[in-house]
Length: 359
Image 1 (tube, rainbow, N blue to C red):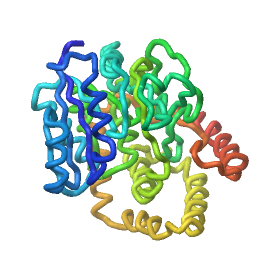
Image 2: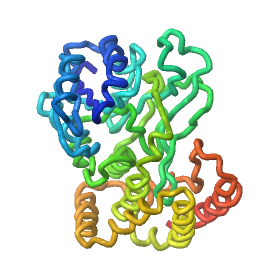
Image 3: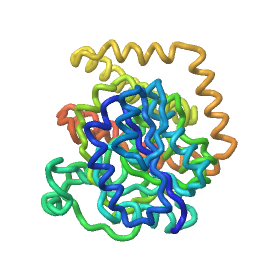
Image 4: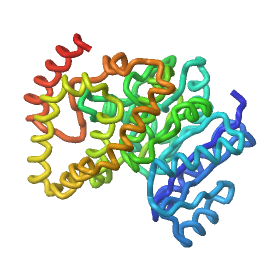
């Protein structure tokens, strides 16, 4: 386990001023040998002010400035620098977090527990209050993610969200995808799958790289003793509806075999009509139009074709085998929608369980 680890954090504008100090203190307290840890902060949408702030508050970190705000490109840059500095394990972690003392130790132990483990995810708990110390966060803890679930229409959502924390043993396999809030990936696995697809920009990037890791023949596991507390805000996420929806379509276009696309065409069309109506009601029809506009550009189809071809050069597991683990339900726990719960999910789940027999 005593290998160099590169920890990659991504800042965006004033994000570090809100969250970095607590995160930094948690990193200072880690039990993993400090001489084996390199910390990289990618300053996305960098400015002289943000660069100066980062260098002042976290002088031990290597600051990597970028200008365009592309989150996936920022992760790639951090990982590439860590690899160039001799790091064998790459840890991607959100800045709006606090870590238990053994967070990194346990995460790397999970990553190295078996040769075919490609990604390990921490147990991610909801941080009940930014004013509480870790010592006072032992009661009434709730789960943010024990690994994420992939719906057959390309949606991703967290598992066990909001449930009371519970003790877990071993290293349970994650059949969906690892949450990008706190995951570790081996250097050789990252290089084999080509890192993150920068076309995703942000959102579903963790789903994308997890699918590639599984297609390459590696397991994704949960390291349940690697505890991290996440200051999660769902309302902050839904503002980026364009990337969430566009990247869902990108996932379908890049990864799904054409036969499977035909089989899910009917529920996909129904869902698209529902989302179009929902976008008009909720006031984000403009973003929905932009999604359609993206797929009206020939250059973007060329990118999709190239990515599909690239994946085939190292893929060892059939996609349809992985698709057997997809869910027929869409369970966004933060959205209490009776139509989704009592009508759409039962019908779609029945349909998916039926067509799975033919793939």
